Amino acid sequence: MRPSEAILRLEVLPASRLSRLAGQGGVLGGACFSHPAHPLDGAELPLLAVDMSLPAGEEAICEVWHSPEPLESGRHGPIRYRQGETLLFGCLSLDEAAPDDARASLQAVTEAAYEAIFELLEARGYQTVLRFWNYFPAINRESHGMERYRQFNIGRQDAFLAHGRPIIDKVPAACALGSTGGGLQIAFLAARANVVGVENPRQLSAYHYPSQYGPRSPTFARAGLVRLGGRDMLFVSGTASIVGHRTLHRGDVAAQTRECLHNIAAIVAEANRQTPAAGFRLDALAYKVYVRHSEDMATVRREMTQFIDAPVSAVFLQADVCRAELLVEVEASGGHAIDSGIARVFGESSTRVEAVE
Image 1 (tube, helix red, strand yellow):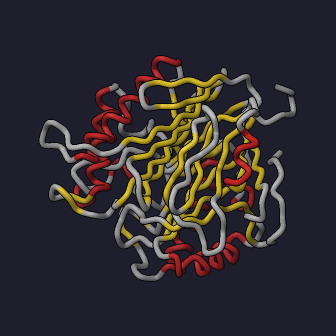
Image 2: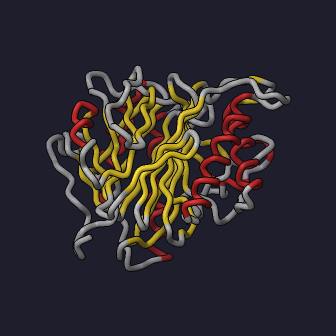
């Protein structure tokens, strides 16, 4: 790796250009979004094909992570992964099947998926996860007397506990969204580095949520902060219109979008307090924006443009959010290099986002 080269880079590109990556040695992995999900021609690359709709008229989109380190591919049970000396990216897709016991199928498959992930990370020597991405259909539907998101939280936490991993404080950044179809799909980015959890002073930590949100609290941090290759990097979890632990602005997507961004701004400020030299800024982050109703896309885009007041790289997707009353969720990351290779930057329609120096 050259001294000036970023150890981690995020590229946003059309799925139609994905095949050109197959022979590139620096691809860690990623996820592609379309409705319906398209089979991916990525050879042995760990790539998820997620069934999610984009704004009308936009083609299938991929987010791909790169590293200049020498990488090798592997498989561990259902997981495909790529790893280097510092980073590992993996993904898996599992169909739900009725378990042999009384557990809901989603709870059982989530526990099995996370146990497989932790087994892989332990075997390969990656002690920390920078971020999880979780997608599964009907996230707000009830079955077995419980919302499916709550079933997912039980299965996830059981796997954390089974592998002796903390379920408070030292937990990874994450998101969980409702896809249009398919099974449980998980992608993850792990590192041989110490990750510091960042919590939002405006919000109760998710792992301390009261029991009204389910028998197990969600196991994630509001953000993760890590230093890799001489750069401070920030991975912000899916963030919604929640203050304390309560949903605000029910039915008002514009106000919910602004509250999401106030929360992300608070996380960025807290990260900068912990690492003053990092200088994270809202306009230097890469965003993924999940909107419950497709007709609200333009409103969310407008609110983000006005709030951030600068061109940023953002992918917009239609997806159900973890609480039925939430209309939008926003995740972000920064400190790594960002390359938006298509006109996906809003605020200036043809701007190209270059590597963050």
